[in-house]
Length: 427
Image (cartoon, rainbow, N blue to C red):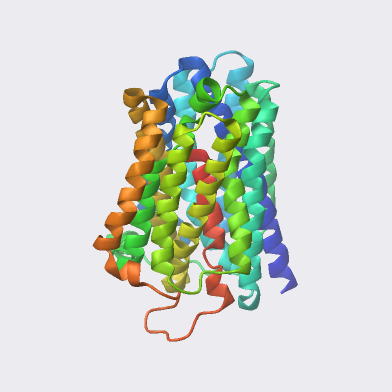
């Protein structure tokens, strides 16, 4: 047990360092892109080009994660992000950063994260004894949310020394995370079955065959796709709220701060009853808070509204991920996590593109206000389109009479933290 706990602690530290580094890079890329082009469309392209590789690689990534040693895959992904950060630092220091360089870096980061997200989601349950899984996931979630809060603020602070410094610090944190992952050991039984379309599509078929799960993750997809605001934060920071790069970092960290507070609250008071209606209500609150942010011209009101979006989103994702975790066998967890990652990426990175394109047409305020209203409408529509989801009560396996206990109550915490990390990048 001591060996497993040490392995989990190393993974936890690696994810903290990697998450903070990722947040720093996204603050720098967004701010530098807007400095170069002053274009909402280009801010949206950053998100689109991160999502496209995840969509293209979803089947391959899920199969690779289920077939190979997940800690090694995670280390390789982090090492690849070191290379991207070093390249951006060199370009920034030499004055050769262009729009095309930043877009190419976005493609590279998207391709790497297509493998990273399912690998780290599927790795955690293998490192912790069943008796400790509840506490481990709660601990992991709280730590990651802290990194998501601190990462953007640190990125904005370091950016004052120049974008090259921000990229260099981020690259150093990625390298530390990769080194920690290389020290993780666990029992791995390689799957030797030949590659087939049936194996590649197993995760997609699993999600499609579970209507409550499909309803939950599609609700999250469309709600965040419409209600995204973070892609436009450089515009709001500079042109509406009149703050500097540090202010942008604080704005980007506000959703994660709300998510952190809610994750701690859910660890103490988990969702025990009326899970479906709680999920729909959380999505509606997310939309209303987005609407408030879009109309706000005061920095602290904007911060508060973003924090509420993060808190509402955490409730949504904990419920969604609990449903997935309860019904997915470990042999399929990589493939199902890869499909889930595509939904996360679509709601976040593709949401960036939608926000940028709409802002180019309506302006940033019009884009965010329209998206917030659209999110409320989606919550109302899903109440009718997925009645089984709305009627879902306790988070239990189908046919199980008793509650599943603490492990299930926080089963979604780890993946929820991951989603919030993506949300901090993409909303």
